[in-house]
Length: 398
Image (cartoon, rainbow, N blue to C red; front, side, top):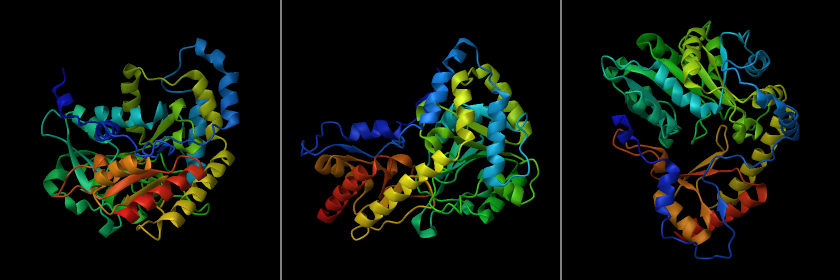
């Protein structure tokens, strides 16, 4: 067996299940509200459903790992529209993937070279646990940049010494961030690109929350957009990962893409040829249709905008709460440690949220998620408002 498997920690939701062992909500008549998993609960767009149905006959064919020309072109055109990019080559700079999760994991297996020094993989902390698992199973050491409220959850690269940066081969950056909702600024991207130039590491930019934001006139800055604004032709050592799961409410389709540096994309495609992870042909056709339509995405944002406004109205007189830059999570500071708050919230109010410490590691002397919970505002508006009312009730008792 791969000895690195022993280094993998329990996934956050497994930890949550263990926390709730032998517990039961005190009021069984109170309806359960689950806000711990970032699974969109909005309706599947009807036109996507219909395209899938109309193309089920495509299941009789083997799919292409590289993806159909139409799908790659629809993704390239979407990237150019969304980020005002001069050009994205659908033949050399884009590959469809089965959701960003599998691609984010597989990517480390392509990038990491562990034949000499112990390579480092850096990510923000708290973080999406796939980054850590990908690093460990590629034979690398995960290293962390704490995101702290005192610095507005900024990416502070000075937390790690030069000796770590010298052996860094891959940096995972999630913007808009899961769980804080923080969006990197152009200055922050410029700093990261300068470090990439100095040390030679690759940047994997996880942008699966990029289409959930609040001001239609100011969408979040993307990594490819930042690179182009800074004159980085060809997106050197930069690959972005995106997905339809949150944007289009189709997590079960497992549809996303990677795009960026053509030389890296070429090697990633080689890996995927052997990895055996081609996208379902019917899903490829439906995905192209989804990337070509924006109206359903605007409607989706309207729902999240309403939920955040309602949630903040309920909580703001009791807890310190503010709307994130983007995404659908509330990263809520709790009056007691996040684990205790989540346990009591489940037991006393029948609401499930995720302790922030389960999404983080102790680094530089602290676990930056210890006094937080992550709340996914994925349920219908009325259900989210009811959950916030119960959260406020618990906070007022503590």
